[in-house]
Image (cartoon, rainbow, N blue to C red; front, side, top):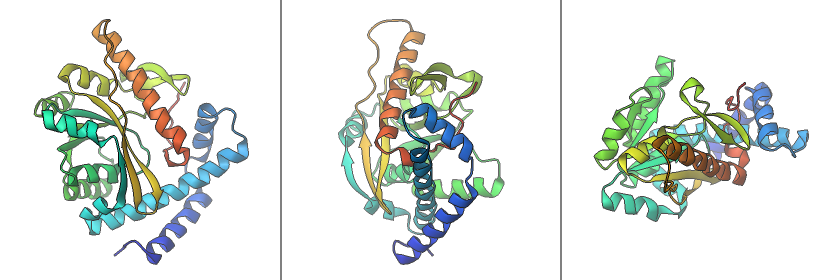
Length: 269
């Protein structure tokens, strides 16, 4: 059983070494950094990637620890900012679309929201591996999080109208189903769902993140809800809100680039 302390640090250290040695998707990660931060030197990109691997080693250790003591996540979030945006939405029972990225520790963030009393459902893509899928399902159930399958297009709107919070990751390539908008000044396919669900339901679209301050220590931040354009067609408004959502995600990443999932192929030809 893992718990904060020397043993957890030792496990994280071993995992960091293994990840750095194996270098999963190293070429993809360094290429992504070159797009996002073109002025960075190659040595800085490599240093940031090593920090990213170390960050993800700690994510795994924290994840395993939380499986043993789920409510301990409440103690790990030692700072908050912008929480009033969530409280206002909860008080009005209007629901909220929570925009997050694969940044910081997004799974712990969902658990913290649930244990903090927010009615949170996360839109997820189930892993193909059945053992991993069962592990993730068990974790989310233990944390008190609801889930919505990625292919369930109507369910998020239904949950929002019930006054629930729906968390959607907006930082992955969305293929033919996405819309082309800039991300770090380069167009890429982006999910329009967060903006569309917010616009259709009248719920606010709130960017959120969990910034790592150290092992088992996080800062929760919610940014100001994304503004709905005053004019234009529905498609125009969704595009405008999606562009602003990407800017919100960029701000998160610029603050702590080593905490983002650089290994995902975000920009594709």
